[in-house]
Image (cartoon, rainbow, N blue to C red; front, top):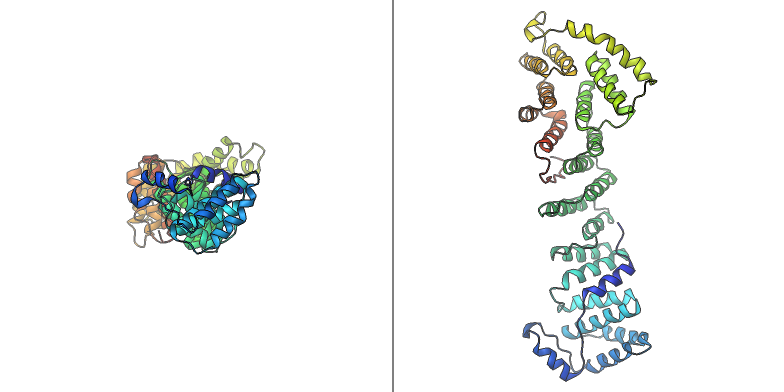
Length: 429
C-alpha cells in the first residue's frame, strides 16, 4: 500500500487551510474581535518581530530566504500559541517552496501546540501519519492515522494505510483485527466496504502463514462478495486447514458446483473422477456436461471418452436397478449402504429419494450423523428449500463443520443477497 505522494501531499495541504497570520498589533486586535475568546490565537511580543521578518521574506522575490528563519523559530521553546503560529508559517512556506519536509515540521508543530482547530485536526493527523509512513516510522504512522480515523477522516485511502502499518511490523494478528474494525465500521454506513479491502485483508492473512487466519478471511471475502472466484478461494483455504476422506472431498466439490467455483478443467476432472470411483454415474454425467457447457471440456478431451461416455452408457441400467425407497433395500441395510444409495439418488437429482435414504441411514445403529446431515442439507439446498437445508447444516459438527458453515453463508446470500456481510475474522468461527 503506497502512501500519499509528495506531490499529492502538497496539493492536499494546500486545501487543508491555514490560519491567516498577522504580526501587526492592530490587525491582530481586529482579528481578535472576530474570534471566540476560547479559540483566539495570540502572538507573543517576543516572537512578533520574527514573524514579521518571516512574512516579509516569504513575500519577497526570494521566499527561500525565509526557510532558515522559520526553522530557527521552530527550534525555540515556544508557548502553545507561538508554536502553532510557527507551524502555520512552516506549512505555508513549505507549500510555496514545494518543500514537504518543511510542511511536515509545520504540521507536527501545529499538532504539538494543542491549538489546531477541530476542523483541521483530522487532516493534519493524516498528513503527519503519511509523512511517517513514507519514512517507514510505522508505529508513529499508526498512531497518527488512528487519531485521524477516530476523528472521522476517510480520504486518501487511510483505511488500508492504517491496517498496513501493522503488517509492516509483522503484527499480522493485530493488523487483521484492525481490518475487522475498519470493515465493520464501513459496513455500518450506507456505503459497503469495497471488495478490494476484503481481498487485501485476505492477502495479508495468506502472507501471515497462518492457515486458520487465511481460511477465515477467505470466507469473509466470499461472504461479502460472493462469486466463483471468492468461493473457490474460500474452499481452497478451508481445504488447507483440514484433512478429509474421499466422501468429504466429494461433498466439498458439490458445494463448489453450487457456488460456481469449479473454474478449471482440473476441477471438473477431480469431481468426475471422485464420483466415478463411487459409481455415481449420474453425477459424473452432470458435472462433465456442465464443464462442456462452460467450454472447459472439449469433445476431444480424454474426459469425454474415458469418463463421460462410459457413465452415459451406465445411467439407464443403474437407475433402473436402484431401490426407490429405503424399505426396498434387501436385508436390513446398514447405515453406510443407505447413505450410498442416497448419494446415487442425489447425483440423479432426485432429491426426495436422496433425503429419504439419508434419513434412513441416520436411523441405523452407528450412523455417521455428520455425513447424513451434510447430505440432507446438500439435497435440500440443491432443491431450493433453504430453510430446511439450514436446519440440517446446523446439526453438522466435527471436520465437516467448516463446510456446513460455508453452506449456511451461501444460503444466506441466496435469501438476502443485499444484506451487509458480517466480518467474522476469528479462526474459531
